[in-house]
Amino acid sequence: KINDVEKITGLTQKAIRLYESKGLISIAREENGYRNYLPEDIDTLKKIKLFRSVGVSIADIKLYIFGVLNLDEMMEKRKSECSLRLVILKFLVDRTHRLICTVTCKTISIHFSTDRSHPIKHDCTFCSGQ
Image (cartoon, rainbow, N blue to C red; front, side, top):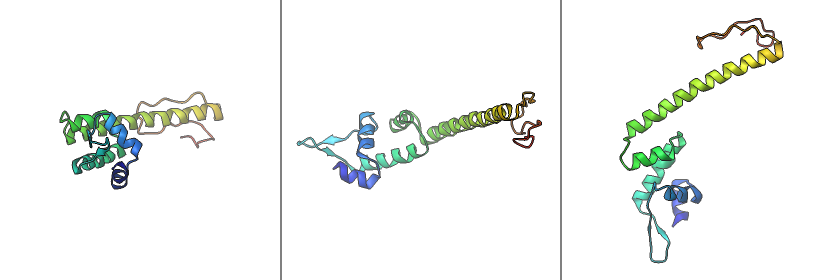
């Protein structure tokens, strides 16, 4: 029963049904219409939960389950996505900092640096010149 699967996997019934509706698992039904979860289904749900916990998309998990992506390819893809997101976040932090300096310190003549590993130096009492 779905209540048992929910306890075993730590997933909500809503999540379990979502993964079924997206085609990540295919659950056999008994004559009375109840879902019959096999041990393989529970193992798959546990893997899905693990992959989702690190942000792997449902689409990529589906590709993995159907053998289009292997585990290394899927995790390498996720690492690349995280690296790109990190670059974007660093850019946004830098841009936000410059905006705060511009608005708070009225410092408009900030020297833009192409080297993101070094903070931009300027005359700013708000952030002590960084």
